[in-house]
Image (cartoon, rainbow, N blue to C red; front, side):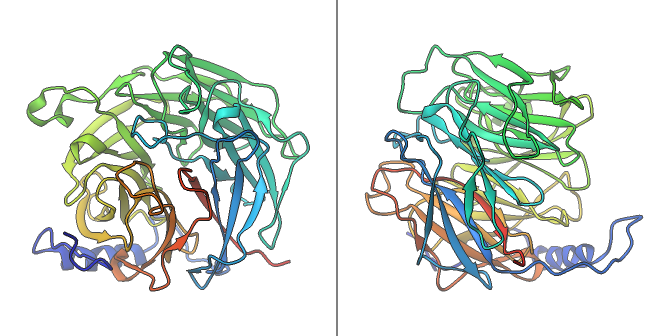
Length: 427
């Protein structure tokens, strides 16, 4: 039974309040060597884009939701065809296990989205008012089966082709990682690098580190895989890749099957990687270096969570958030005091049944927008598939907006995926 569905704050230690105060103070201090500069405030109004992920032929769309002062609107949702088709699953088979299905470039002038069951990548120009126009030639071949996640390093776009879409039998098809050059007009070049991995690997994420030098992915075969990204966009696998999870991740140090990392995110200032272990209800911490070598640091419990999957870190590097797909809540961690030892501060129950999936912190740092999909049949038909807005308050703690959630207008049985936020630009 859920108590206080709007918000449930869990006192994980008697020092939780003190941790919040310390983190707030740290967030207010510039990084060493930084100088205070006047920056233009990022507006708290703009567009949240998600992918309908519709599986019938050429039916996939990007859905654009407006938000103003951090409040989402379910009215006037705009639709833009991706020219392809999506994936489908309600059996928890791993088809939907992915992040970064929709991304933008840093200037937020281009949007990229996967068409999983048509093996293509759609590219759009983003207009100041939030409208989208396909670039000439879109969609582009992904050079593999079932593209599921996209990463961008400068002008290099990298796709993880999952080879699993819930529509076709791809069980004997290798997955791969492929890089492309993004031309000035937004179109994609022929492949630069393409590295196959075994059938059944089922990559979850094409995560590019903040410095753009390393690509890190996790796979449902239970490994991390990391690559150096060359200046021309070439991919070179790291010296200890693929890397099995450390024994210390497992209770008693005894490995069990069907365990893999998910939801990769890094500290914005340090080479520290965070992830979740869904089937163990754990958060794990690794380090990486420029050679794409990964090193285990620690595993900690993710309290009051079931199936923690997806992870984001705020721009100050003081708070980490996990979306917990099985318990319909988020966990807030302090990472200001010791970035390699996250301290849980809060557990926030979402105000509707569903499976928390893709989410992002808006660029102003004041709101989290989250896709709470219907990913399994245990969520009753007609429930789930909603967008939530959660205010980020003092100390990075969360409160769901009274107007949240809003319904995503897709047919029952559809699994919308991906989420990216673009603040409004002056026209």
